[in-house]
Each structure stands twice: as structure tokens, then as C-alpha cells.
Image (cartoon, rainbow, N blue to C red; front, side, top):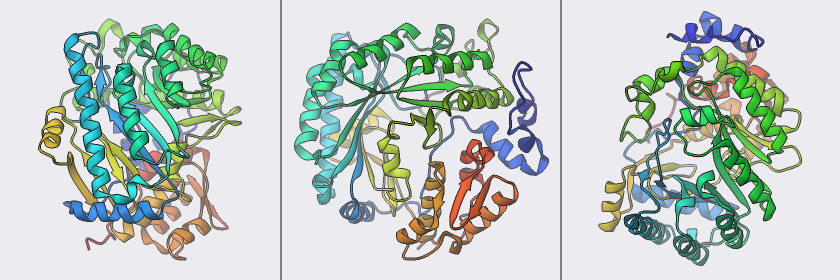
Length: 480
């Protein structure tokens, strides 16, 4: 199925998507091709100087961390009890009940602590920097035995500045029972996050999840019962066998549950699942293996249906929720996701340090990506090497472009006055790449520029990822 044919895959029971006419125009084929091929709406702002010396990266981090009001710190725990059919991330699959798995959990925590100690040695200011939010991501961190979780948290509290930190924990319904939630609250976690993907058991099963919709609801209720009011639930649209009406039912259920925070992601397209592997590069997703696609006459909804789904998300959530950043919705009377604001809001964009397999750490001048293969990750640390696979610098030109792109992704109007404060009085209109993009996007009615504010139109909000990833020419960046 090509991009235009996918756009024409529509459910006649629902209105034509607002974005349809724009994407159907031949002059917008670049954006149409991007949204057709883009698997999950990526928030990636890569550097442009390859083979950047690690010593320079650490010096950059030291400088930025010293100047930052606070930072985002996260620990990645890669263990999972199964691999979801859509999964493309580095994981270690195990049976948490098996005796052999206990050593794996111990190893994962040992390795995470060792890596953290090495970061602290290389960036002295890291031990004193105020952590704005600390996240334990996965994988499925909620598989960690209580003793290992307590050991991990004891280390982080002892070696990092958690005096003002908010603690957030990611898990999955099958392992976030009430006793575990009580342990999390005792350890200081005030936020939990998990992927429901859908509240329809048929869709949950089709994407390979081994929990039920009832377990999702039970996890939400259990968290509230013990005083964890911040519950962020991930939902996906565009999955195998999913219809527009299925997404409508998910939105109705989400409102019924009065979720404080919801992430609504267009995760995968049929073309991606049939022909491409995931970001970790270790293996094909399970949906790519023979027999899992088109099973039981189930198919992937085309691009047109996905935009009908997206508009249903907006219709149901916009009255009571605010989208900030793109795909992240929070109730109007509650704050947005703190960690996302720390790294994307124009008046922040502070450093993030990611510890664990597949982690991605970044400051304004450079970034480093960790090894994504567990065996290689373990070997590096056992040889007393930081498990960094790649480091890239960010040229002065691209620093401005990336800062603007990150700000645009928040969906908050980008304020030139704030930009000038960041860049020594320089306007974003002084940057040729930004200026040319704004002029072009304004002509296409995707944004407006007025009195120093750049505001996305409704179509611009829908296409913000396509704008960020296809419309900025960064060839003006310097290699020096």
C-alpha cells in the first residue's frame, strides 16, 4: 500500500480527517511520505558532529549541569517477562519466577550502579545537581524483586541530590500489584506509568500483551487506593485489528476512569511492521514474523483511519485535557509531565542523564547513546568502560535549530523573547534554517508568526513531528 492509498483508507462512519486535504495535495508529498513511513512519532533531535570525543562530551555535560536549575535523571531497567509484538527496544526476556532470573536482576542492578558511579566520576557536578525528576524506565522495572529495587534506590538517594526530586516509575499491570505499589509509595514514588495500549482485550491480545483490560483498571484503582493519584496510561492507535470505533471506546473508557495523564501514540504502520526492524537492531518485531500479520483476518488501519482516530482523541480529551508535549495529555487542573518539560520547554531544556542499556544522555552541546545489546553492555562495564556506543556533537547552528524544534514539539507558542535569552539576544529569525521553515510553514497554514510568537495551527499540531523531521534544513551547521 502506498502513502496516498493508505491516506484513502477511511471509515465512512466517521468524518473525513481535517488533515486529509492538506496531505492529499501533491506539493505536500514529502510530509505524506514521512507520516506514512514514520513508525511511532519520534522525539529525536540528533547531533550533527559524528565521532565526538567522549572527553568533550563529559566537559559539555559538566558545564551545562553546573548552569542548569535542575536535570532529568533516569535509570533504564531492561528486563521483561515477554516481548510485545510491537516492541523495538532493547530488552532482556526472562521468567521472573525462575530461580535463574534472580541472578539476572542482581546483575542488572549491579551494572546500573556501576555505570552510575562511572558517570559520577566523570562529571563531578552530577552528584550535586538538583534532580528535577527521577524516572525508572523499562523494559519492565516492576519485575525487579523488592530487595533489588530497594538496593537500587538506596544507591541513588545516597549519591544524587534528590532534595527536590519527583520520582516516577514505569511498570505493567501484570506486575504492579497492590503490595508492589505500596513499596513504591514507601520509597517516595508519587507517579506511576504503564502501557495499557487499549482497553479492549482483543486488541491487547493481538499486540502480544499478557494482561487484560480489567487488570489495567485494577492497577489504576489500586494506585488511587494507596494515595498514588498521578497515574499515566499509554494508549496506542493504529494497531493490528484496531478500528476507529475501537479508539472511540478507549477514549470513552479513559474519560470514565478520569485518568490524570494519558499518552496517545500512533505507534506502528503496516509498512513498517512488514519490512523493517526496530531501533535496537537486534531482531525483527514479532509482528514481522510469518503468521502474525493478517492473522484471523486482522489488518492494520491505514493512514486515513489513523487520522480519524487522532481526531477522536482530540475530540474526547481536549475539553478537559491539555496536550503538552505532542501526544502527552494532562488534565487541565494537573501539571504536565515534568520530565518532558525539563528537556523540551524552551525556558528549560536542561541536561538529561540516562543510566542503563540503551540510555540516551544529552546537553545543549553534545549527546551520547548507550549500547543496546545486553551482552555487549555487560562486557563494557565488566571491563570498566562506560557502555557508550556513539557520541555526537551539536554545532552552534544546530543548537539553535534543535532548541526551536524541541520547543515546537511542546505545542506551546515559541516565544522569541525566551529564545533571545537563551542565545545572547539572537532572534530565532536570525537563524536561516528556522526563518526559512517558518516562512514556508506559514504559507502552508501550519503555523502563524505574530509579535514574536510562533503558534501551530490545528493542522500544525497534528503534523508537528513531520514539520520537525522534514522541514528544517541544517546544512548551515558547522563541523567545527
